[in-house]
Image (cartoon, rainbow, N blue to C red):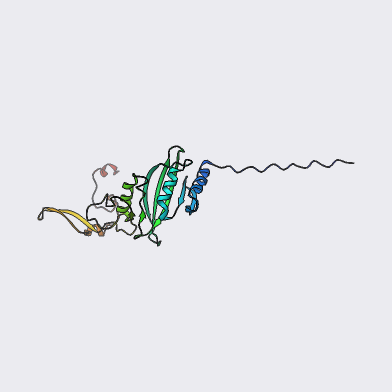
Length: 217
């Protein structure tokens, strides 16, 4: 009886490689549970989207979970998407020194709905939340001192909103007659309205100082 030809043996399937950032994303999703609306890896960092009203509880869990230990608040900022009903993303950046890891956390809100302040969890967030209020008009409840931070007293509007005019609403000058600083509506001089975008080295009828050296006979 002839022997059967050798059958090729199937190689065992390679196990998927779990990178440290994927492991971190899985740990964040496990700690947040149903409060994790989305957990993904974006731009080299783990990004999680959570409900606005759960942000304080979520911050406590991320800080106190020993497998995460996000004990440092790095930044709180806002992003404006005017075309959305909830036009603002409030973005929190956390740092875990023990894991050498960062986490980006997002909630959404609109112009009128406040976001719970996390200053009771991370006192360092007070400054960042004031900046987001000043620049974008994002409201925070439970903040001990929510007032403008970078703009002047009586400033109109929020400069980082996409619909804020480039020239602003008012201009400031010192009035010699009144002996004080006054605020007035912005006035654009005619030469700024009709700027022709020409380089100063083009379209002139005179020779600029130094150009005569470049002239050849």
